[in-house]
Length: 238
Image (cartoon, rainbow, N blue to C red):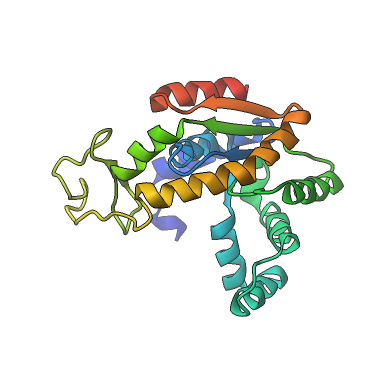
């Protein structure tokens, strides 16, 4: 209830909303292999530019739970053991971007993965008189990703991420805030990562080439400290 919100918190939120009204619209796609740092940077981009963050997996689950027309179609496809078709996913994105938190634009993460998907997304946006402004391509050598992924530990409930070398917990094996045990994702190993990277490069290079022709791709050198990566992104989005 509103009366439970402190005056300071309320004023901060009002200030944030007023600032967001003066921000230019932005519609962007983040592309990068698993472990490239997109997950670290996207909340900052979202906050700095007042955008909504659209991850296809989360959107699908939300649409199914909300029983929207596309959500019902997606559920039927999944229950029959089939893949959710591109037109359903683009329909779910179209529904999502109508929400008020997307009025300044969006960050798309995990879609499009193929050129036909990119074309379908472009057609949907063109009907609304807008387009994808920027595609941020997070580039990083595969061998660096293997080191990043193999050392990664997760706090299951919060999603907090640690790394044995780069950002270790204060007490090995335990979450800093709760003291609860950390876990490893079952696919955080070199063999699984190699197959995921092979699939990523095969699938997404044509998508990058497609947007490159339109002059919308900005290369982000992701094999750098997070602050350097953030500075590159800020420069790209000016």
